[in-house]
Length: 253
Image 1 (cartoon, rainbow, N blue to C red):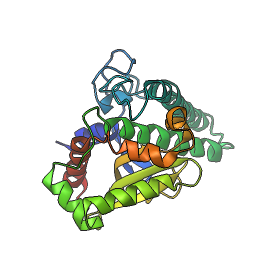
Image 2: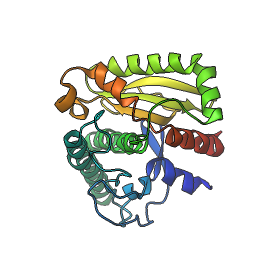
Image 3: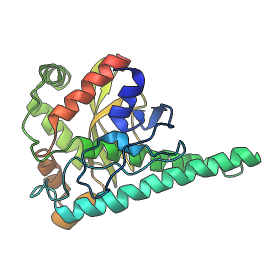
């Protein structure tokens, strides 16, 4: 796997280092197909056929496949409306910055740069979120290298799980709980991201992300965020997490 293939497989064109990315050429066309949430085309579908456009990734499972842990109505609204909003916002902000360069008018560069950070991080983290869930998820990682890394970084899988659930449940306001690989120390880290981009270490590659914005859980769990995060542990696709871990270490280690 070369660097371009790694970037496509990890985040549909971006490998997150904290909240911003290292981009590939965006000129490659993504796979086409229904956006119903049932086609399994992978995260490469986040790149549109136009070099300037990102598109909503298709899912490898149906909206109701994660029940009873995550309900179908929430999945459909979350994927087709909320995530689509971040895609639209990112494309719009990039277009506005291109317009600013064309006109040599940077009066609003601060605003549109912030929009790129907010919508871009929302888009990329959601791409991770969909990728690391599965109807056959849960349990513990089968991959020996990932298990060793978890044990070395957290003491045991149970200690990691307790840390991840606690950190994700305690995000102030809206945001994410994230398990990431930190390449300089070659270690795993759990951290919080407020909104999408705040508080995130800049030199980490997210391997696992749980969305704790209220739109991700409120229909089923109301204000019981902790119950939702514990339920999320039952749908984690550890094979996908392990794949991301190995790809990150091969390319950036």
